[in-house]
Image (cartoon, rainbow, N blue to C red):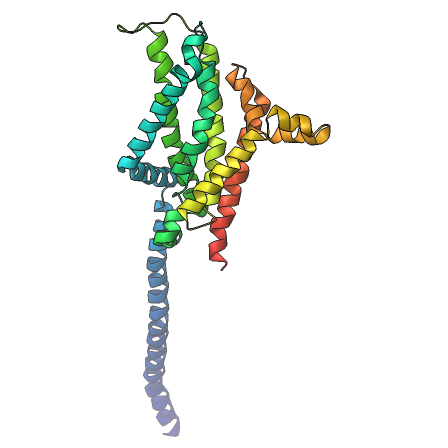
Length: 306
């Protein structure tokens, strides 16, 4: 009897052990379910971040967006058209009438025109660069630009290209003078012109404008005042240009004179004005451009450190 009772008790205990095993499995599944939900939720949360990174426009597109915005702000202002028109009128009066102008040369040449454009660019470049970053700082929109998904380098390059594009438009309008004068226009034709020196001179003016625009953007990144940025750029360009005068170079004889001549924008531009493509001058203008853009980038980046 005792053995039968023990056997019956053992058989009764087996279902209880199976029930306990099933309850343990259910608890394990319940514990695993939240972890699976959390992992799934993490995967879902990770997807938008990855998508945002993948959907960010390319650097070139971001630079183009900033440059287009900068150009639109200039083209929508009537002051831009007034400045360019006045510059063309003054340049035309200088080229045609000052001390006899073009008519005293008695030959088809645009050397006088190309040589006089840098003087106008020294005033025109600061007008287009003085508000590039200074106005953004004064209004407070520079903080909005920095917080947007756009890099500081993209802001600098976009602002730079936008300002340079407006100056190049002015140079293209200057090119209409010889095109009208020396092509077979129905109302005015002055003969045949050797176009190679002219286009080399225009290329030199583009490099001159590229370096000058970088100088203006650098000063615009330092201050919130547009007036201060204008005069700082004007003075810097004037100093870099006029230190190449012969009197200054002769006064500083030896290596100081050679160093001044090397740093002078006038000395570097003279080969272009004569129709000579000088690679050393191109390297000079490009080096000055890169240096000033790097300084402007560091100046904009330093706002995050303060």
